[in-house]
Image (cartoon, rainbow over all chains, first blue to last red; front, side, top):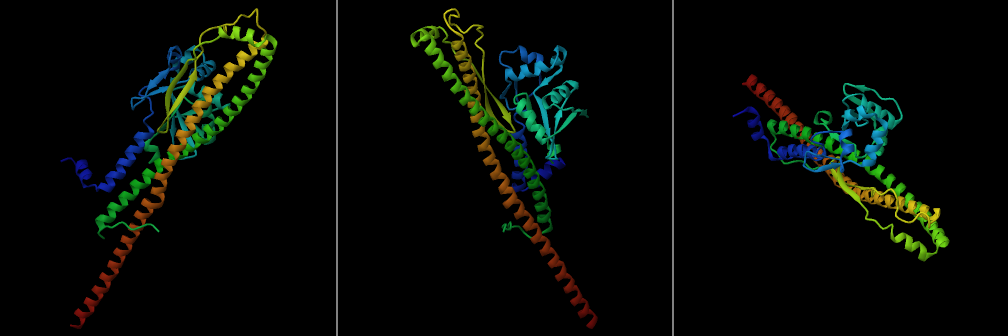
Length: 152
Length: 209
């Protein structure tokens, strides 16, 4: 019998319940994560712009928000911007990180927050007050990610 | 005072309890993170709701004023005759999105795709244009307010539920585990002391005898 399975069997019901609670909470908070991100240029052409989430539900984008993003970018940048943008919550409760692929996200965030931001190791780090401001402007085009690594 | 958990006072149980404590603290961390995000979103929604309500009231009062002026200028019968042609179906896109595990609705008023409002521009004045424009803005504000108020309710309910879990962990489960671990540690120390005293006594007896 594999060792991990033996350990699992040794766990008491209480421990299993807590373990399930951790898993359940992570499952709940990350249920809204999209299966795959869509490019802004594709979403602009859709009648009802949306992506499918991990739990099978759909995440709708507001057209007004997509148009707001499109107004800040040129055609090539629109093709490069994946949506929804993922906001990773760190172990440090005071800050959050926006997962980014390139310079496009940097441009969007700096324009939305009206301040310069830099991308380091594919993350743009922002503080809680800035996060609130960003979420106010980009409600449907951003989603939260709770990472077990960062919360542990 | 947190209650002690009934366990056998053995070293294995102590190890198990410590493992349970680590797990409980991990759950607490996740739940607290989630609660802080939900609270932030709730406060933002509350602010937006107040703003949207104020905007709707302002726009409604402006609309009624503009409509009264237009009615006074054209007369009710003439205005109603013109407005019959403007009737159109409203299209609202309804979807949903997820905020930290809470599924909330999302509404958006769609454009009907008509460049003109439908009434005769020659026979009507700019007062009617103004009233029509304000009524469109009012409709948009109503849809926005509907979304915000539902979000507000759902977030509040989820915050209540999450708070209950956090409180249970913070005030019952974790203190109970810590108290039991402390009790077991004290019990083992007491056993060690008893053991030492017994050994000393045996040593004395052996030396005497």
